[in-house]
Length: 397
Image 1: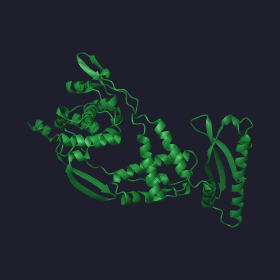
Image 2: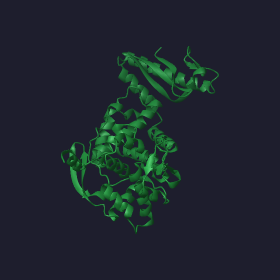
Image 3: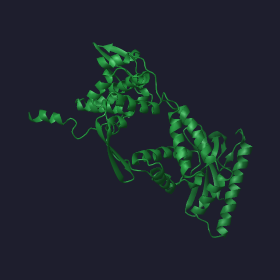
Image 4: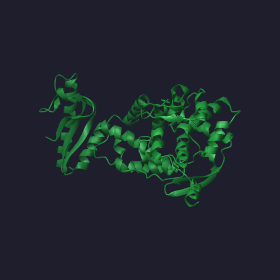
């Protein structure tokens, strides 16, 4: 017997059906795409679904067809003296691709819908847009991509395509690859990719580059700004919420005066994080209190990034900033006005950097901003080599 089927218990009551195929150096195992069975409805001895399964006849007929096709091919390969793990795996991958040339795109589209439904962000389409963008960039490289093409080499070639055709920086390309691999991990669980596929071994090493933050003086510029359009005024309030609280962009609009309470003569805010669902307490100073009293409305992430640049330009946040980018191993440096590199991340980063410079204990900052690990928190601290050096005067004077 060359083929055996068995249920593989996952996190739910429904189990994947896996096939175990004999190959010269052991066994090759893979998931049967789209098929599920409950353990109680499986006959372990026969390796088939019991009659209690709602579609046992159709399922068993399908499994019989797969077993016959693989067994016939194995016998043929043995006769031709071409029986190896590689030839068996290639046949199986090709077998499940027959008549399903567009299955990659169809499955990717269903994955995008799942991500949209599962999104906790106030901008529920954010994940949908992100993965649609990845899918389009995959198709721009290979319009006829098939599951059998996906491996470490494919990812490496796609990465070069991102560098050459889209002129993406190293860190941006690294994020695209990481997010695409998240999709591939899901596809692997669903049986579209073999257990031995080497795609996971490919990655792009991220490069640490200086990131901007708003100094306390620049945050004060935002606070005192007047005469703005309604859209930029709303963006200003949202950004100030981020700078004063350290919360993620998705949580800014949820910070309001109703969440403020008083204790021992001081005001505090208790936000609920959209992403992590954790709780924390934030001290509310006078300026923050006045900001929280004013209503805001949420913006999509692209709109927020665009508005934050326009806002910072209008209020005069134009100090020269050395923008560093990498494309592959090639570094490029450009002196630009700071407003050009401002985005929704700058609120959370400004909170962390200014709090560190003020001498606040990192653990207190992490608790207020909802950072779970120091490693993640450290990524938000991007001080220049001169920031905070005035504190050395206290050591020697």
